[in-house]
Image 1 (cartoon, rainbow, N blue to C red):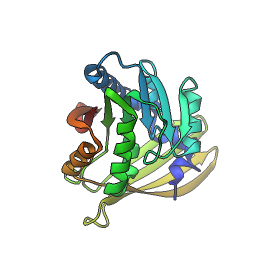
Image 2: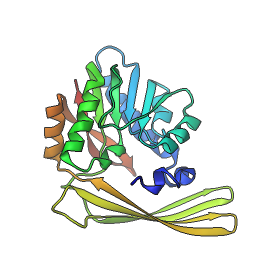
Image 3: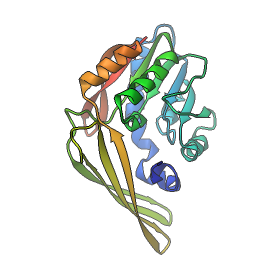
Image 4: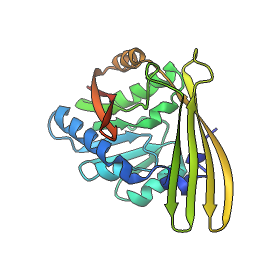
Amino acid sequence: MQPLLYGELVPWYHLVDPPEDHEDEARCFQAAFERVVTSRAETLLELGAGAGNTARFLKQRFRCTLTDLSTDMLALSREQNPDCEHIVADMRTLRLERTFDAVLVHDAIMYMLTEEDLLAAARTTFVHTRPGGAAIFAPDCYRETFEDDSETVTGDDGDRSLRGLMWSWDPHPEDTTFVTEYAFLLRQGDTVRAVHDRHVEGLFSRDTWRRVLTEAGFRVETLQRPIGDGAFDDIFLCRR
């Protein structure tokens, strides 16, 4: 079942995840692609582009094709990225029969719940990356780094306001998933409603990631990504 945040709650999405919060990491992705892609990188495919928040910045440098499973999220992306190509697609099965200089798989990769799903997404990425091109995979966390955590979410826009709690926890540490619970209070005018939205996400070790990406055909290295307040995490920069 599709999470409410990518369907019914899409009109509230920018209050949860403001586009401006993505500028620093988008510049990091751009610099990495410019550094490793042979010849000049011109085209970029994003798998699981969601609301197009990262593409908002990357399109200033690349000609972007954006894909996502959620038609509602792609509609939101079209509003801020009308100059980008949008395609409804599953990153595990998409085959466009063309290649790109760069491919980005952002946090939508977290919805790959099994190693088989992860490998399918990695193979999709590989077949759409041209020889001499590169791909970036940006998971939120790894089995080694995961900890139960919670944080608050606050957003305001005119007569609309959102207050929320995001709680990530692992009910079954023996498997390859964890759960993120969202509890939202949504106010429009003088009306307030409460919504609970559960997201089941994939959780793999760094070794599993490297093995899967290598099996797909990539040469794998790590990339330091800025995550705010001067902190960084490790994601994967993959060359074809």
